[in-house]
Image 1 (tube, each protein chain N blue to C red):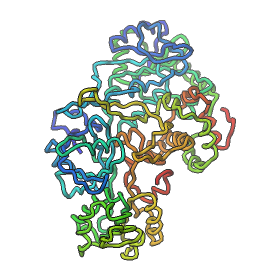
Image 2 (image 1 turned 180 degrees about the horizontal axis):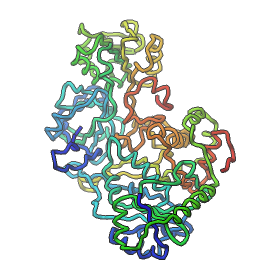
Image 3 (image 1 turned 30 degrees about the vertical axis):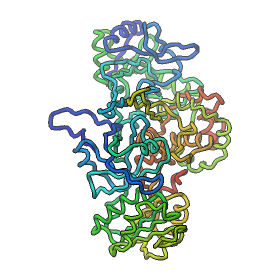
Image 4 (image 1 turned 180 degrees about the vertical axis):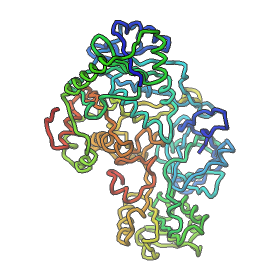
Length: 343
Length: 290
């Protein structure tokens, strides 16, 4: 992989060049939090941010997405976004890049989702490294470093960035700036390693995931699920903010006064009471304990069986979004019989 | 189904859209049982109509334009191509809308999805089909597949039970199998208020008294309401069936049919991709299965 360096005072110049590759979107301050948004000017971008409210999945699986227009005589006509609209997501953290890599596993495979795929092709990812806060446990989920899933990746080295070039598109972006980027030096590598081990020490949360699938099987009937179910409000916030939650609902709508309409999909959550409800009224997960257990079970057990790793990247959003302070690291540590474990 | 991805040499083709429903015409509505009609469909596109191949036990996603989409198991057999028969219970929004349609109206269909019965592995064995109530709908595909490939299977036994004669799916067709000497067709009702029922009057598990089953050489395919599973599975285990020779067909809410929307999760598997046919071994390892 090509490794370069960019002096920090040249970042603004790079950003201005980037515009020729598409709309630049980046984390922008929103009250006390941050959100990915289209920039009207580069100075709005906040690269030294804590997690955004929603992960970048909102660009690839929009909250509401039209799949088909239904037209009489034509049947279901797919509505797939044109690849002409190019977006550059600047400032994506490693956990969120990992989240997209996980969504890739789901939305490709035997059946490729063309809606997701079209957006994946038209949206470039420029990653940036970060410093963990009290909710981050990406290291436990093996998502604190990424080696793929970005076009460019920036690592702060003080007065400069170390820049990894991940794709040909990323290389084009670099080349378009002329001599702005320089080859990384031995000194950069040493500084990178120093900061890397510093980052490792900065984590305050730790969970052990290695034999978690087995422990989930053993603790399937644990009273913990009932306790959590009594606290959980079934609001679904944890799923909405999760970079790897992808459950969706599909609805057909008819335009008033016509026989035409559209089929849309929208975010859903396994915590909602209708998630496992079948026609006729049978509900396979009627109570909240069953539903919250299912969410954990699916991410930490089911997904491992199917894809070889948990569908959790340790971004900490579910911890900060939960109105009743259910904390995944606590849940896992309690299941393991290790309360109040810290790194 | 559609091999759009197999490009004609050198020419790019559109990536297939797994959510694309293909329009099909209702060619027949058979009012079989109250709230359980059999709808026969034919795809408008002739190449799809002729090329639509599937395995017994697979399902399709049925779209009623303007209402939505629902998974429905295929009741016809791939040995009789050209049309697709779906035995649909009127129970939810989509199926209610389907019941309002008439012959020649259009619906959308896509599929086939799911694993289907492992017919290659089952070939050369005895086949025991045990259905309770509406469970006959997906098993009818397997039944006709086996009868149409009679030489590929050894003994074929059907055990089918419903509460009373008016609830029996495919009653005329199945009655005509009772006299066949190349299979054993055992039909039963819990009670016969009409007094005209010619076959067994007993609970479904009682039919095991009328058949000889060799668990070592038999695959059992079971589908029905939970009470059927409870008693039939117990009976099969008592007979000495290995847990992976007992096959069950499950139903769940589905929005995509292709392993994305996650509504049909059971334990750590998806009904649409890993099922809907599961072995009994899967079943006891997957929480929330039945």
